[in-house]
Amino acid sequence: MHELSSSLTEVALDAAAAGERAIQEAVGTPLEVSTKASPRDLVTAADHAAERAIIAYLREQRPDDAILAEESGEHPGTSPVRWVIDPLDGTTNFVHGRPDFAVAVAAEMDEEYVTGAIRRPAFGDWIAGGEVGIWASEGSPGVSEPRRLDDALISVGISLLPERRATSFALLGELLPAVRDFRRTGSASCDLFAVATGALDAYVTLDVRPWDIGPGWAVARAAGGRCLRIPTVAGRSAFLVGNPTVVDQLLPLVESHDG
Image 1 (cartoon, helix red, strand yellow):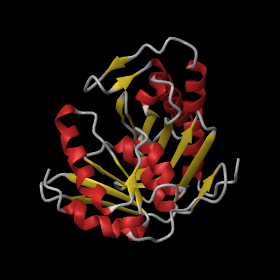
Image 2 (cartoon, one colour; image 1 turned 45 degrees about the horizontal axis):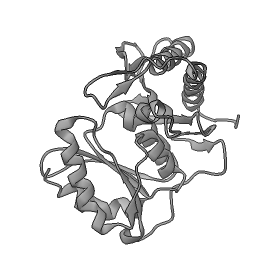
Image 3 (cartoon, rainbow, N blue to C red; image 1 turned 180 degrees about the horizontal axis):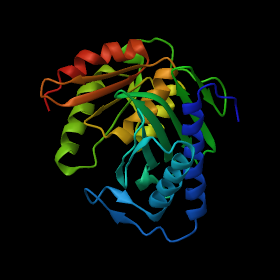
């Protein structure tokens, strides 16, 4: 593994590795698929196994820190650090045998994501970064070069909640005429991995949960990206992450979204 100069970044990456091992051990066993907030929001035994492994590692390494995990919620702590965990981001892809899923871990201090790590088990790669630098399993990560908005390839997050899906698609429809095109993996962490490596120019989403945005937010910012949380005219929380010039050009379009 590359030498990491931030202890929190190293812990994040190693914690994600613990989750990745749990997922790999679950492959080939019954998935035990169930649903959560909506019929589209899936969870499997692998999600739970990965989360248990991550929490166990964090409790061993940093017992005083708080934890917010997607499946089990809040775990109190006494230190200024809170870990935010998505044990298997892209569960629907995982269930359908698609490779776009990830294990994602971030550390938060003073309501800022200060470091994050994303591992993609099916691809065998990882990226991790924070305030002191960024590292990856392959190459030197960095956001894309400055470009015009009509040359940009972006991703727009689509909510799994029935009452919010139409708004997500409406935002996508408003942005499409202004950009070259869009791509969506079905995993926010995989999309943000692509932003941090320059394969996507920006990621935009509404009302996202901390475990979906936190790890990728920290990694993309360490890769030179601009990360903004802004209110839309309709009062929704919008998140923009990516190439600074593209984010600046997207900003007025997203702010004016009235869905």
